[in-house]
Image (tube, rainbow, N blue to C red):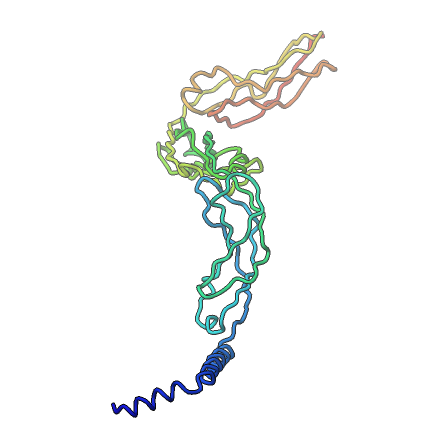
Length: 308
């Protein structure tokens, strides 16, 4: 390149340096203004459900579920290409143990956004330890086997564990399962689901029964029959002598488990003391039928004559 041309270029850049610097600054300011006017910073609000984060496995957190209002700001272009599901409100309980706390609500949001405000700022949280308690299983029988057969025994796991938040586990009064018998005449087994029940007969929430299903074995056998005398189970009133006791009927046909029926020599009425304000006492009394035994009648008429 000719020397004279180089001199001209050098002279062009070296003249009016201040004016050129001012022009550069003004150009940059104009660029910032134009870009800002085309992509200004704006603000928007989102209602986000508050969640629990980092809960240790040995604890359960209780709090009033609610939404938090999260205000975010960013250049307008950021609001065009973002996913609202990436905005979260949460309570971090990783550093807390059993107790009650007013904990700050935190927020997470896409890169490029700024958090301006979150409301409310705190949530009241109660943290309960997860505990385990051993309880006996109570099986409830619904239905009956085929006529002339009886349930000899029902066998299953005796004890299970109930696991859950301390305040929930402490409300459990029993663990129950239903054994459904629908006319079977031989032994069978079935899977029975278990439930943790409170004092009002309702299932307790957030409590697990381990195992939650048990195997139940039902032993059914043919019944034995016997005709037995009915005996009045009474206590004589003071100062009275009983001359005669008449029962109608005098006997009852019973049927039941052989081991039980074989040991019976009579069926008694419920215990009673007759009223001795007259010479003749007459009343209808219930029969005291043993467990695993059936009878076609449940009452008997008792007539008592006093001698004096």
